[in-house]
Length: 182
Image (tube, rainbow, N blue to C red; front, side, top):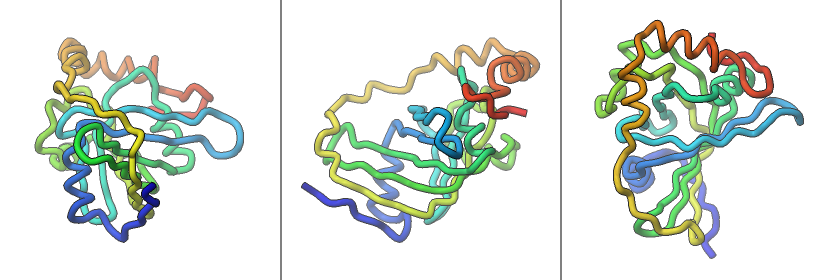
């Protein structure tokens, strides 16, 4: 069995691995013993970027909940995990402190490969303080067929006002009642 290996920075092989993954997972939790831990799968080509050796960001699209945003606003703790579903087995985890940034033109310019930005509700930026990888021996092999376009098709039918109303109705608080979208 391979042991967990710690890295000083996101460079070389690690950066190549991260850039090649079509999906990643985001984990956050509220402070204290109460509340729900949240794990969300994320994807779509061009929605995750390595900004430098200790900073990453991803586009946060509209969704049915806003747990990550609520947790980050409360305590900032976040972990990003990438798994190799093809090729050599590997798992990379980025532990850090995240913040919710407005999806301004300047922030969106960090994602030149993004498929569309109309449905982006925020940009999540993370200062990474622990970088690890491990074996991933039990992660299944799966074939990547491509990105889904369902979210993009959904958002094409929404105006900016429609999206603002959606956030107000469905994303204003977390499932634990923490404030999320403002």
